[in-house]
Image (tube, rainbow, N blue to C red; front, top):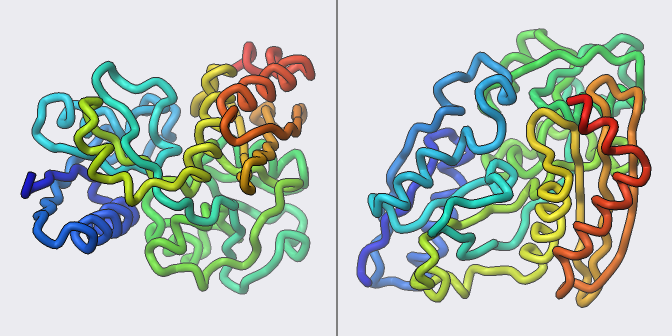
Length: 303
């Protein structure tokens, strides 16, 4: 193989991620030519509507997966949090690179902390998960919806459309906007999205790309995201239900925290478990069952 065709969305963040993967492959295989193909997805076509209204999970991946299945491309680079927990037949995750910072962050014009925001401050986010947890933590906040790429959201903040943004640290850092971060939010305030900060390199399941990209794969990131995605799959959660999960691998031990919340933040179930990294999926399933015992089923049924 002397040529590899890679598919990606066309946003600044998606291209930053894909070009990083492209650079890693070309550095490891100097004789391999990597061609980048930009594919427009459903989620890119309706940027003025909430993700849940456009179709929820899969709106940023379906067209790219179709290209994989049609053999138009050989691999795709996704933000793993956009990737549905059930992949189309014939596709698999060939590699999970080292994970970027998973935390949610507060961005304000003056680098204020959450505790320093006035009562009734307007925070913008496109995520029900963030909305629910912020309202649970501080019921006086006013949460407003926002869509658009990272720079678009930052521009809206600077123009005064909100007092602050809640965003992913990973996205800001990957496009060189890390200096805008005012505060990293602790798990006690906001548990991050399933697989946030992780990349998924998806390919056809014939094994060719998996072998090629073995050098790029990180076992710890794989264990963390396996546990988180197993929990989400067990809860059958998507963009319509606020679900957060964060697993942390340290050697052979995997620790995990997860929440399920009502969109208004009035009800929140939270649980923690620890287990072995080589039993990651079962850990995620066990934590999902713990949340169900706490009443998560009622929240899920109401969605």
